[in-house]
Amino acid sequence: MQDQSTPANMTAAPVAGAITIKNLNKVFDTGSGKVVALQDINLTIDEDEFVSVVGPSGCGKTTLLTILAGLATQTSGTAELRGAAIAGPRRDVGVVFQSPVLFPWRSVLENVLLPIDVLRLNRSEFVPKAEALLAMAGLAGFEKKYPAQLSGGMQQRVGLVRALISEPAMLLMDEPFGALDALTRENMNLELQRIWMETRRTVFFITHSIGEAIFLGDRVLVMTPRPGQLKLEIKIDLPRPRNLEMMASPEVGLYMRQIRECLSAKGGIG
Image (tube, rainbow, N blue to C red; front, side, top):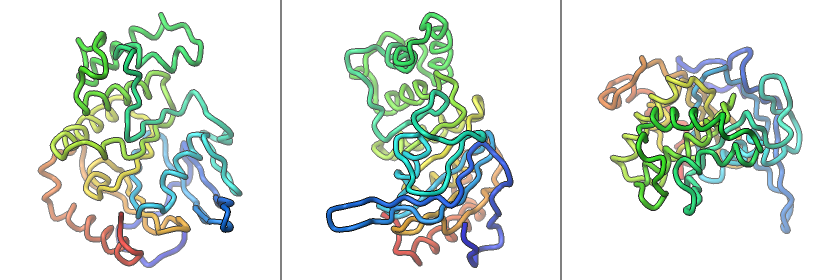
């Protein structure tokens, strides 16, 4: 991460952790020339840490996530999970997108077990775990329901449980609540915090909501417009579990002001 003039509570990246990114660059070849999507990304995320990422549309947030998921490759630099290079999709990486992408012909339980079927594991060993995770997510009794019978928030919870079923070391979330109404989104933030506190997975969470990033994150990273770089890093010093009333506190107001000022200086957030 580049040395920048930042607020007093900006923190240096941890020395070691679950995710290590060094000098990462991503360049796309297009018909009109090369496009630099990511430039000189350096980042370490600790085990069990929840890191939120905000930035303008097109700044490379999702590109970085797909590289961490093993769904895309960097042009140069390295990305490692627990010391091993990320060179393709891995069982120990779970991904949750904005749309839960549930198969309408499969029940809730069958959708959760989909990764187990794809990996050709013994599903009978995972059924009790799937049922326990669904109960933890507030979905006990819905195992035999189908996606069309669920609300949007419930569908996203199914998607989250599906990402957790294979016990991932890292959970990647790309604006998972962006399509939900404001009230449901707030409830999902509370649910995600609770589930994270119970499972303690390492989370890389992309959002366009500054408030959401602060509420959920141990740290918030702010990216610049393309070429995407890590401009600002703020440690969120709020006790857990957090509640929605905290969002009106002076501390949260200061965090929001610092992030908005950074984004405004770089063209705002889309």
